[in-house]
Length: 631
Image (cartoon, rainbow, N blue to C red; front, side, top):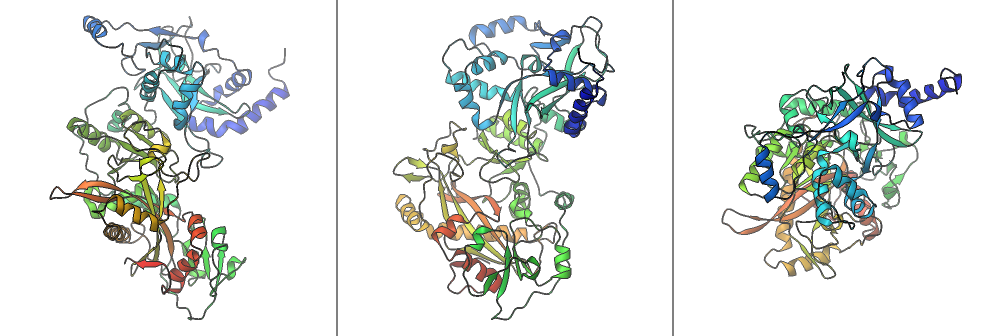
């Protein structure tokens, strides 16, 4: 038998600590357990069964009522929440000492998945649906996966789900992973005074994630194992909200109004972004014959400009224009040492391009509920009680409650969820920071001859020439994106029905229609709604958005830096609404504003695109350019 103190074993432990120390400290795992944890991970030792047992709890109260209910209603599951049907207790005869280095245990994961794959896995992975139904006490006795049972599991799993995300890799790799602990871990109940800590740990040598369990105090035989489902949150109201999936409470006393946040909100975002604002400079004046040297790290720009007044340079220091994909942070140095170098970004433009900020600044024109051109939006980090209150009020009034959860700062519909399930939405707060917006339940649809009536969205490219005075242009060509399946308010996890971004998804159809053809087809389908009037409304809405975004000085608005220029993409949809006279009208809905958008289609189908952009932004010349001035 190997000596546990041998150098080889110490080397293994040293390497384990080097790889996992940051995660262990962040999770609060006491250092006294680390060596034992390493031994159990390395040996795949699952010894919790020697120390703990699962006890089924018989509910004595209102027993007659329960029996009557079972006779008249389908058998209803209990959840692992505050009224448990199971609990985990210490069964070790002499109890458990928190000071014992060996008092740390591994919990296996029964199911690990990403949300977009959940339905497919439940239908296809042998035994998975049976196991999940049994774990959640959902009756299922068939051999063939049952759609109704799948729906029930997809609904109830938000009372069992836990989450983590990888810190390395592509944007797709960093999408949160959800998992359900095995039957032992899933039976551990909530307590405001928990007896145990738990945390997921990604074990790098195996590329596997386990949940780690350790005692927070000494426990005697028979004492319950519990954990805090709202761990780390001390605010009583927020704790009530986070525990809502297991123990719903009445928060109707909370106003659902969401006024614009205080200045401190923007100050904290500014500090987190680590931008350094520029000093005031005079607007750069250039000779009309000047040839500008352009430094860029964007291939689309390098391949898209052949205008005689722009040449490229590999030397950033000699450039007149810096057109960079990566975010500029130190505007102060540029304003001090190179004040007349023109930039393709504005300080504090994240107020437009990050979704929580977009919703906040928009309230300057629309009041607490936001403007009509932006779906009602709540920040799940700061406005969760207001959202739950609003959701429940809509529910009581019988109003539509379809919502869409989006990360603050991801594009391409990554980690985006459509649901009517309040628990699902609340649990999203535990993953990446998100907003939740009212899902457009009555969108204007487009008739595709090959499919039927589908959702579509529209992308306009806007060019911000300056903030003071506010000079805003829109490119005359816009782009369409279409869903691939007929729209209906069902199958909310069907990507090709509810989403339109198909150009990054493998093996799906990408429907393309040029804007000129689209306008003709649209007016045939909706003859009472000429596209010119819709576009006038759109441009008015774009103007209002940029006016509010620049209405306050930085960091509360986009910074007025005379050397800055920018290109943004505004993605929007159209929805049906009713005006004050009861007439059916089309209302634009701005979905998001994108920083440095992908212009591949623009370059491919409109070769003068970047020539037009550069002429408008850097030469202040719009003649013969395909742009329209909005402001």
